Image (spheres, rainbow, N blue to C red):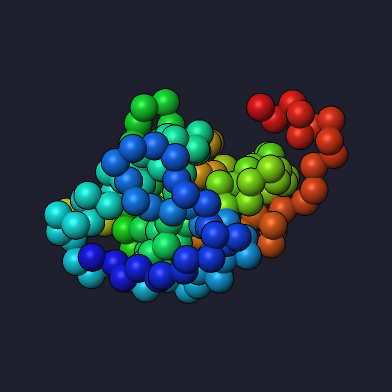
Length: 176
């Protein structure tokens, strides 16, 4: 199971809402959000239990993606869910990106209340491992490509505040 980083500073972490989880949603300036994450080596019941808890935290906070560092684990894995389709990916590696980019407004559970315009490839191919360690290759486009790239950034200590442009207040209100 990925190692956890302990940080009890309540200014840097907010308790995840919902029952059945002890995970804490990390927000800036929590230093774990800047970590270069380590590879996942053990694919066991503890990891699968953690994935279930992350799914609950993501849903309880109206998110569509959540990376290990955002809940205190400096390991290369993330969860994502769009329209009830769930994805877990460990040790992701970007294989290919399209030349075409889309610039859209993004938010982040670790940056509450912030919205930034971020340009990302509109299509990607990524490899990684599922919850049991089985290798998989995915070609994704649109919102799925965007979410996976966003979560992969977290695994390198990169946040949307590092690569995004501020959104004028009128556009922020329209972003949903």
